[in-house]
Length: 177
Image: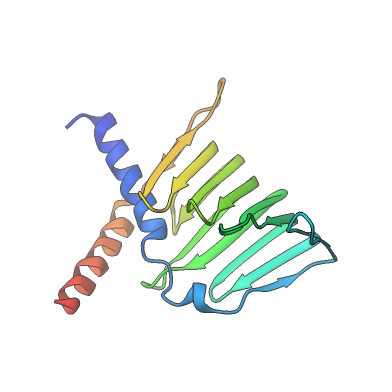
């Protein structure tokens, strides 16, 4: 297997490990939003939170300068966040934290598609991916990182940390059988 192919495979595995084991029950917890101001446009189903926005739900924590939530008829919400940077953190079932950041974050809850743009980074312990743009299709568990011009995508993988994660997956699947 070529080095390029191994790198791609490891990047994909890192991407899967970043979201596949999100702390069970986080999305069932209440969503708390704290901000300096809030405006609501009921006609267009848009709510805007601004001025040091903090969103928490279970182990999930998001900070941003501004968050816009748009609800479309018959669909789940689209969340757009902007900041310098927007940050998020979540604890996985194995107890390890996942952190991310970007100058802007777009999450389409209906399509389950996440886009981090501008100094984007996903990090789990000491392993990380940095790029101008990172997209993640939650349903397909596919991650893509791109950078333009002279910028490059940077990936650092710490094998023993990833192996520890794979061992916990193996143990949990044996327990389920």
